[in-house]
Image 1: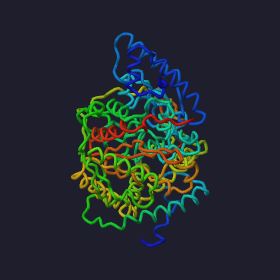
Image 2 (image 1 turned 90 degrees about the horizontal axis):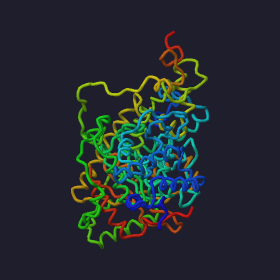
Image 3 (image 1 turned 180 degrees about the horizontal axis):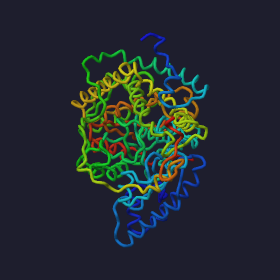
Length: 98
Length: 487
């Protein structure tokens, strides 16, 4: 990768992450993250051809539950009480469909 | 007699059984101690004193009826603010969860309640367990009981400081890259990260799911063994929980650990290690040798790649796990959002602290189109190599001895503006999480400035009994277990 490829496009990544950053945050983070990415280049020192990627510490295949019986569920009052705004047993959010 | 709040579980059990004191008196002793030192330590983000005393009274009533539930009945256990405790606050030391109360108990909490334990307080941490100093908490920094100007380590800094300062008998922490062992080392207590899959994570707020584990912190190896026993067991509610036979870790401690072969990886004693730490660990290794343990130099050749592998995998997983804090069904909601996308991004921008934002951005970047292969996939492949290093080593040795940290506790603020320097503090602990192995840290010395030094003992998968007995052997032949900070 060339030097310019390594620069994080902070606006684009913040948008992907659905995370609003202040201009201050952006400036500070960009510098720090670029340093960290340079550090990550250590990984290029090792040959990984033919090595299997490891996603999990133990080889566990799909875990299935016995049957699909309904267990205890939280009363809707409990769940509604957590929501920042609710109405008629629904969580209220700004308009989604134009 | 030792103060109740500084006693070990076996001593407390004897006292409770012989009615020398009640569970309420024990809890009150811990509450009073906490009141006395908390202004200096700030180990807790929340304490429900009434609830703790109510649990203690229930324990006393059980004992009076002859219904003692075992070693934990009436013992106050401090809980990191990342594990769900029913009807108590659960904030992960983050503003994004301000006001949130958990509607259910984590499985490890249920197990402790079934064992009669008093669930005590919400312990401070780095926000969402991201950090090595407990400075990334939205609710104030925690001080190291050995030097109030120093950090206690992190992310389970509150869990380690509370145990060290006598504000809990034992505590639960979580460890994704060293978050139990590193604060345990810096606060002079015992802390253990069990094998991945040994303890259910149902009710643990996820940070990096392929690495996170719950584990004990305590002032003695035996108390960690007891706490571990109390929380292990298969849980259908966590698909990564493995079905392992129950092990009586505390009884296995006295089984002679002699003649075990201990590996010493040469890569862990090279540049970057504080000379006092190096000396203390070498002295401990000499002690093991003199006691008849075989000592073998081994190599873990990919060790220096652990930090980059970890900070790619952990941030990638975190960026995905923390997507749930979107301000819709729970968590902080911005008042300035005009549409749904703004609701997500403003709520998250207002709610998360700096380190969490840094890691979400980094994790999103390494997973993004065009970079996935170069970073995430490559890191997963190197992770395989790191695991192979351990597999190779464990064909020759029973356990591996290393320092837990490269330096003793550092001053507050010293590394806050240099994330890379902070990340390098985890250099000796994170390979264990990447490989899914068990490891503990125990105090093995003090620096000239009176700061604790921790030694890490790494075991084979499900080798908890081995590393506990190796650590116990050292502990009972040295005096570090009974050292107390002057607060």
